[in-house]
Amino acid sequence: MKRARTKLQVLGLLVIVVAVAPAVSGQAGTAKGTLTADAEKVVLTMATAVGYRAMNGQVVSVLLSDKAPDAKSFADDTRIGAGESYVPGIISGAWKSQHFTKHFSGFTFTFNESGRIIDEEILIGGKNKTFSLGGDEYVLELTSKGPKVAGRIRTKTPVVDAGRKVGLDATFEAPLTMVGK
Image (cartoon, rainbow, N blue to C red):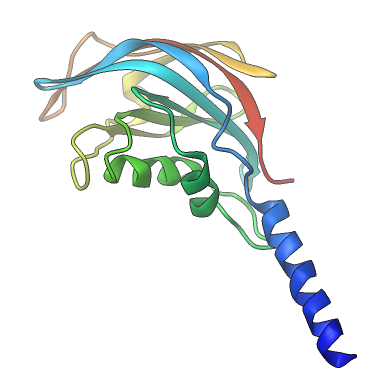
């Protein structure tokens, strides 16, 4: 009897862990635009948007990339335990780790309820070559925050010189996948 109860408890814990992990990396959407860093150029064709409640309010993380992210890796990398909360950076960090394994190249950013960019990263060049410019270097024009996320993001000037010459100009539209509570 005790052994049966233990198996049921383990099964219950497994159900809880699976329930709090995002089921998908976000549904596929579209992006049109380019990201350049010095001589490297990425044609952005895919958009993915994931929303979640963080300690600082509702936020949305967006990935603009040349290829779709891997849903299984994303779920593994964003799994949280019962009672834990998502924080800005966990979603974009999962996408960053996929870039490190050369799954795709692109740009990820997170914005808050007021549409202000609070986290961003340029994913070009593989491991140890990603970098950020800071949210103030971009213009984000949102036309929809849900049930799809759509808009345009671009660098304030066509080319930002931050030790590397960087340019971004893309439109995007993706269904918003909500994770967490």
